[in-house]
Image 1 (cartoon, rainbow, N blue to C red):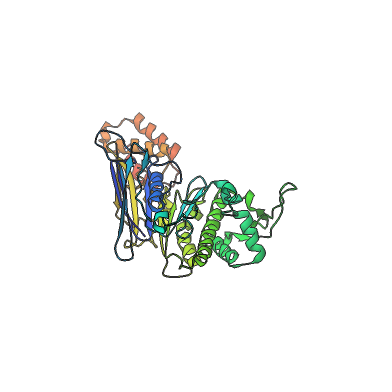
Image 2 (image 1 turned 90 degrees about the vertical axis):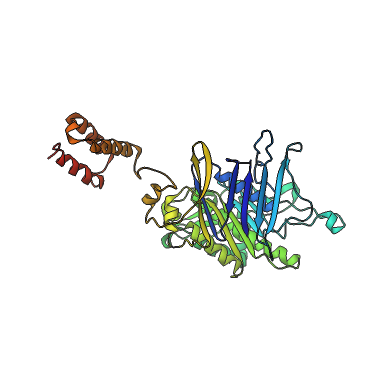
Length: 424
């Protein structure tokens, strides 16, 4: 379980410290303040490999960039710290076997995925073994096309890919296929729009593969390669969750050891490409899916998720538990990025979240409506004797052009206008 992450002179601020909660950690903030960067560093801290470019340190006289983190241990917390070696131009690593964080998955916004398995990627040093250690990948790094077509670096078959595995699982009707079907249903947007596999099909003379399909709510079976961006991301997620857990179980049997009891899931912009109806359910669906896959109540699942969606936050109000969930906000204040753990409070709807300090909009309306309302507020604060009829008409016309007739702001405006003698 990931307990703490400290960034010193690396990233968007001189110092950032997260004390993560055990289940949900939601990270919000404006574009460009470092949300994705936090996930990238969290992935490195847990796996000691970079999913993309390594984090660049701050530079300057006397600066010592450092990444430190803390994991939950069997008896006491495990602490680890790495300083940037400017001569080697890399983050220094300690010798010996690093701490085991359990299974780690990272879903990136571009459709790529990264997987770290304590059984397949966690290997003792050769010195500790007194022999040459077998060559194992530091992590499984899937480009978007690798998720679909397989991960086969240097002739090694590390993953068959979604298309081949789905077809194979479906043909055999095995446990993996049953879990995939369950994951697809759990991750579906609604009862009326369930993601259900159809029959395997061919899509061209030049492609001899059996291509999985999805049965649509309008009666057609659509090959998964033609699915929408949102559906493709969700079925990729469902496949990687099933594949990661199934391969971990297989590897654990081969190694004659117990499966892990800890899973950390990093996901960037969890709502990307999803319809609002889907945004309302996606996080609870991910938690349900991971719990169903492991099939045991003693597997801890921790999620670090970046979101820009006020609807997603509103949908979590019945689910959020302040003892095991947290909401983090990276905010720009006086030219500096500041991290704050926001006190959780129910706001009722997405509009209320939009005007909260999390998203910081003045109005949950169009920019034109907000500007017209600001002009109207300024006018209403003036003495009625100091308001010219021409100014009143200009503001009224701007409101009419941007607000619907049923907007509640009209009640205040019309009451003021009547009291000021500007409108009957």
